Length: 300
Image (tube, rainbow, N blue to C red; front, top):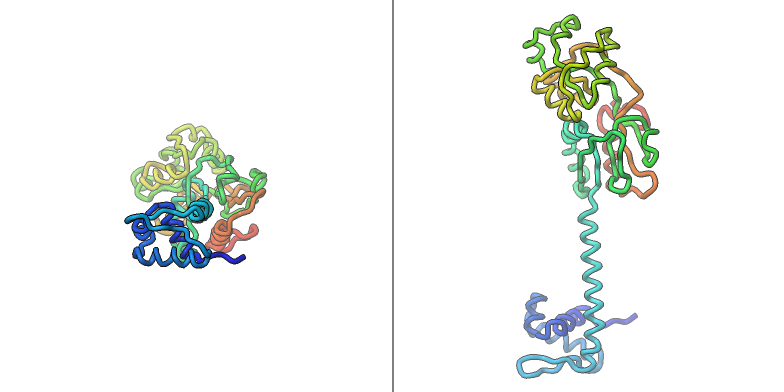
């Protein structure tokens, strides 16, 4: 397929659409003479005139009017398709849905490493307080807490172990005079979403489950973590998530007793559609981080 010179067609399209050599030159950021030269070059290639001078302006010949319709439509389609593809590329961020405490305490403290490794991959992170619900159509990667079988629409891989331990700010323990389980009746319990979890721990510790009836009920782990750090009481938090606070001494365990279950933090990807390259890079990066699990085996 032999086509006219593209620069000449672009100049003619602008002249024909705008009805002015000057306006076309302004749009194309070239001189008037450059536009006129390109139009003349196209006319030579075609073998007949497309534009005629009319006073200080121009008019299209019959052939020019006919050619205008096809050329302008072709450039319009090319522009629209190019613009759409560019916007799709710019909007193709990896959509990550995460539980709040995982995102704030664990993920965001390490995201600098991912951005350094993959500066071309954009991550659009949003919170989800639900541990059970996840939309496969609006999510490329999700972090949830549970068992892999709880999410049949996703490929679910264990990422972090789910052991929970009771922790508090050192200053809070000093303030209430806590020295061990014998002082537990002085503790202000902070509940993440429900009171049953503290009840399970109290049973494991041989303490009265009725103690779980006291203390505020907070809507998500992120608020529970913040309240614990602020010295508002004792939180029963996932050890894998609060390792930075344990290392720094911001939080300290108040007992060696923990709750160990078959629940994990899971990384999910949609099962029934293609997963974008950026999402796969994100998952591989997550699995490479210290303390995480690859195929069920800890990498730490």
